[in-house]
Image (cartoon, rainbow, N blue to C red; front, side, top):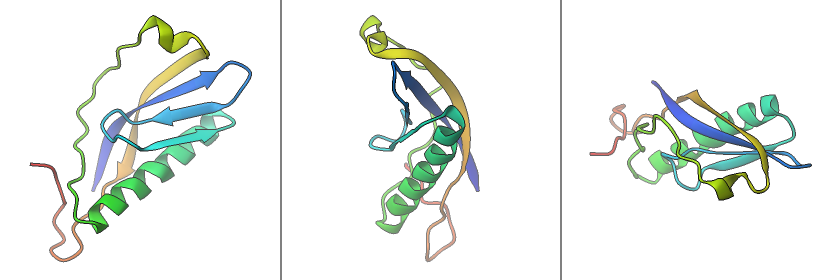
Length: 102
């Protein structure tokens, strides 16, 4: 099973990229290029969801459709890229059913 999660990538002034998923708190990654960042974010998100499933936690549903930026978000940032990322969603180990939030 797969889901599309909204991901926010930020290119920092004279630095690298970072990324986060608004619907999955704590899932972040960084990379030197946007292409590398996308690959690393996919790996980070799939690993994060797998760990949640292994520990019996519900998998957060993708709900974010947009991001609201504030002026201070741009202080150290050259630009943002906001796009959907399709990732594999783990299924519950014993039943084969998806572990989902209620």
